[in-house]
Image 1: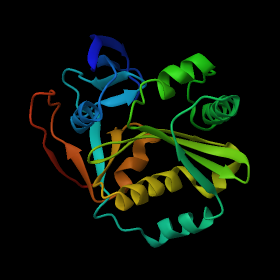
Image 2: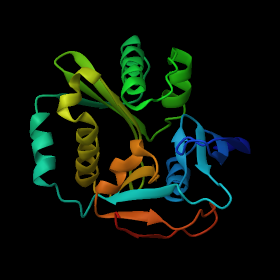
Image 3: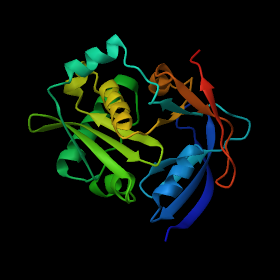
Image 4: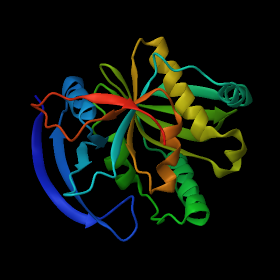
Length: 243
């Protein structure tokens, strides 16, 4: 039976806006069920491993929870070009794992993003990767692995929930940047949701001031969560229009 092992709120440096502080609500849940995970994600939480979190900053609403209406989504000509460009790639949907191949790819990606976007770069270890991306997947967590021949070039970590797909984290080989793998991985999530009759793609947080999250507002139609409802409260989403 699932249970909350630990729950707390921490003040820390904001992950999205430079020189700001944020207050984050954390829960560590043992053996979380798909129903409980779905309820939390629908209310604006995110999952890494067995840890769930959401910002609860007083006086700041910069973090907006967005979800794409996959059922109503239509692929543009640009999207179809990206899909065609990546048609030669092999995809495998499986349970998350940690191998040396995963670690090498993850670290190569983050070294690239340190140079390209100024990200802080801390090399991941097998233990830290396991805690963040493998542990706690239960019966809903998966990875979509992308291969060029036998070479692993991308890993998309997702949860397949009761009403949609929750997008957790994607990383790729910088040598394949010309394939627009970030866009392709999201298109594949949408196609997966459409095949399985799931309506939503949960994108997590969109923050207008954060360049790394700017892409999320481009996918329409989408919806934005109203407020920060607790588990026992009803949740409401309203149509979102990019500014």
